[in-house]
Image 1: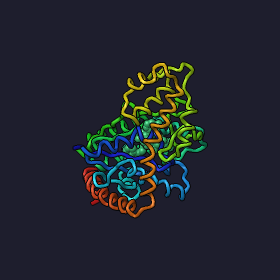
Image 2: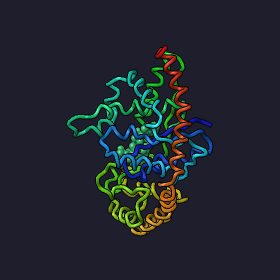
Image 3: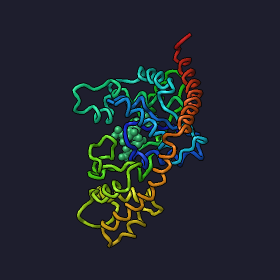
Image 4: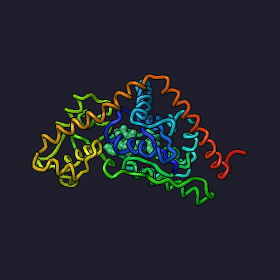
Length: 326
Ligand code: ATP
Ligand code: LTN
């Protein structure tokens, strides 16, 4: 039994990449581990947000967590800004981080690109993420592969502080899936599927209707060979679709290749549309059932209380070792 922590930003519609890279693992881990799942709203404001939309998105992600099968009886589910220790430990870790290492973060470079001035919060994003993780003595962090660099800096900060003051924090490890670790954009399989992409057909949201799912898959970029074969380097479009297919069915990559041997992309895509529609329908239905329920709010209130109880102890330990307070 290990402590698991992860978070998702409430910045838009949760898509297949978020689900297959991260959230699906959350569900799988909760039977054997002590899991804490967060909606990281303080991270969302590192880029501009509309207050009304942000509030809606926070509850959307919370409802989606429950809709995909996170069970609040097994796992703690809460909203980051409701537990003030995240911001407190975030500051502390900022003081032990270096501007050099933070400026090497690719997410910071990507999100800051082309802006006239870059918000300081975007720069300090990784120290707040490290605080999220270290605050719960986390051992395992299930995330998509794009977060690898942030997990590394969390481990560096942890070891830097432990080496200076003795055992303050537990050293966490990332957990990345093989197939879902990086789901690519449907219109351009050289880029990752992203909430912030402008082209709606580049992604499929977990709440998208059947017509949108069909359109996005049928228009998805492949190649002119017509051979259903997994080869991420030379056939990234079809390989990405195979990844999605295998995640939503009980067929392995090899079984999919065999099934569509000599059949071509048209039938493959039609079947994938059906597999996806059937896979996403129960999630959508459950989501609408709980999104506006009182149950959702009481799950979040209870989650924040349970999270804060753990966070308070760990933060106290850190303050004591470092010599803060009196
Ligand atoms: P944005 O476009 O706003 O940066 P995002 O789509 O990257 O958002 P996050 O909230 O930052 O979404 O990510 C939530 C989780 O989903 C993280 O664990 C992240 O690694 C994972 N994730 C995001 N995109 C993908 C993807 N294309 N494939 C696999 N995992 C992904
Ligand atoms: N940076 C992550 C979101 C995130 C996170 C975390 C993930 C914030 N804090 C703690 C795991 C653990 C992202 O999805 N971009």
